Image (cartoon, rainbow, N blue to C red):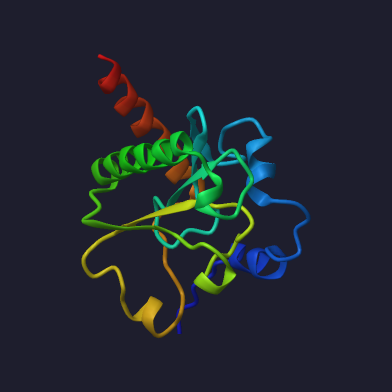
Length: 167
């Protein structure tokens, strides 16, 4: 029988609830790059790859303000979240040829928020047939590229997109 190894998952399983402080606030305090996976900072929010992705290209839009409810954010922050989400979708659609997306917020632990104390949008690219026996029966996702490769691809595609908009 073939074995699929995803050793990074054990780190998440063991530590994600034990980390002191807020993982997003910690990432926001670091310089941008493959270390924190932030590929764009706007005025009120950033775009960051998910460290434990559901699919390649799984991105999040995270406000700089540490809060747990969307009502706590003012209209400008919420508007920018939606604008960044729209731009991320365009970049991933072009770069990964995504055929669809799951986009949303999980507000509160009861709604499935893994990090309930800091609101964030998930942008998950999808393709026809991407749910197969591995994810359905084995409860395992197979990702075709490393996070570092995803970061490089999305960062480069983002910069290309921004140049196109500026011209």
